[in-house]
Structure formats: structure tokens, C-alpha cells
Image (cartoon, rainbow, N blue to C red; front, side, top):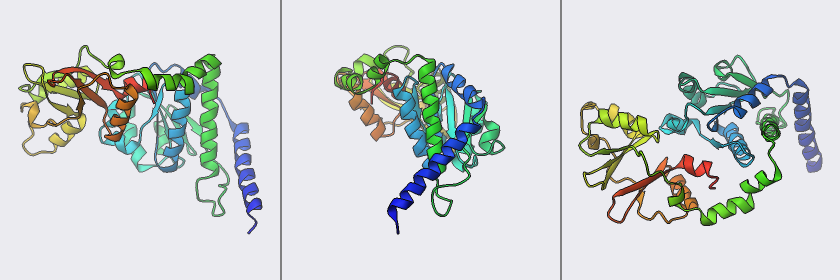
Length: 320
């Protein structure tokens, strides 16, 4: 086996597919760039398997070059995190076949809220292609693997196109070295070292209800609060529980479910919380990620609610 020859063939095969794609690029990629550029909220990148891994890299590249972005796994979206996508956001969905089962399940929900959808797939007539506002084609003639099966050339092309979109956005925004520096080691390190939870957490207009509130009224407050949860306190403001959209979905599966029940019947009665808002924001992000939370509730030493720090707040502040 000639390893050097194999390596050269792989590199040449993938390079050829990228070159072919560069000659086929049409106005659709301009439309994709414009959608992202004009998005008032965040760019959510999603995909499954190797497409998901490529998507996570894309989201990181976008986030570090001036486009507020994060990766959302379709399965997590189906089990609660779909609420992390707002009406002002846009979605970039990746599926080579365009028929990924997990991804296909969330597409109707995305379009139901009229959220702009950019699809990256080989087939415009696939499920993903049909739901997309614009399709960026990622079709290749040959994968680099000897079986022509393993995603190699196709994932390389997808990643390269993601880089191309990110660079186009950088130029469109006149992204300068000074901007880049603020998103990278110096700036990022500085934020990790000095930005505290109290500097970012929300303290006003929190979605808080009393423990005697009905589920119906709590749902209204959850919708108003726009953090995907409602915080439950007693009359003294002491934290008693948290009702998440996931708790609500599970409650609706119960035979005794009623919107007139007390919210405490279905709430998590031992929610995660912190009583020290001097903690570094980067440490809060790690806790949120470790426990797969959407937000962290902050209280004083007597467990009276002081504020909430949402993962969106951390991401938008550049905390990593």
C-alpha cells in the first residue's frame, strides 16, 4: 500500500470537487448571504451526523467573524430547544441527501413561524430543498473514499462553502482586524476573565409567577417572558420551581392533565440555581452546557430570585 499516493489522490479528488463547485455557483449563494446579512437575530446552524459536525464548525466560524450564530442539533430541537429559535432568526440546515429524518421533523415547525431557511443539500427537490427559501447545492460526483460512500468530498465542499459564505459576510460588513481581535484570543480571553454573571443577567420583566398560579396563566407568562421557561416563587419571592416547555409537553401526555391545575403540579421543584452573581459568566456557560440548560436562575442567599442569565445572552456577549 502506497500511503503517499492514497493521500495525494484524496486531496486531489476533494480539490477537484471544490473546483467544479466553484464553476457552478449561481445567484442562490448571494441570496443566502443576503438572508444572513439582513437577519436581525441569530443564525442557527443545524444538521445530523457528519453534516452536524460540519455545521458546528460553521457556526463557530460565523460567530467568530461577526455573525451571531450557534449550532442546534435537530434532536435537541425536537425535545425543547426549538424554543431557542426566535422569529428574527434564520436557520442554515445541512443534509447531503436532504432527507435526514431528524432534520425533516423540525422543518415544518421552522416554516410555521415564517423563519428564513437556507438549505445545503445535493437535491433541490428533497424535503429540505422544498422547505428552503434558498438552496446552496453541495452535490459531488465522487467521494474521496474508495467505496464512494463515506462523506469526504461532500463534507469538504460543504465546509468550504460555509467558509465562503462567512468570508462574503465579513466583506459585506467591512469586518476589520480590530473586529476580529475582539472576537479572538485577546478579547475572548478578557471576557472570560472579567465579565461576571451580574453584568449580563436579566433583572427586569422576568417571567415569574406565584406557586398558586394556574398552568394556563403560567403559559401566558412563559410566552411573554421569551426564555422558554417560567420561574415560580412564593409570596416572598423565594424560588419554588421552574416550569420549562419540556415540562409542559410531558405534562400534556398525562391522563389527568388540565390547564386549570396549579403550575406547581407539573414544575421542576428542584431547579438548578446559583446564589452568587459574582461568578464569571464563562463559568455559568460551562454549567449551562454541562446540565443542558437554557438558562440559569440567580437568587440571593435566602433563595429570593434576583435574575436570569440565558444562554443567548452569553453567546451574544461572546462568552465561550
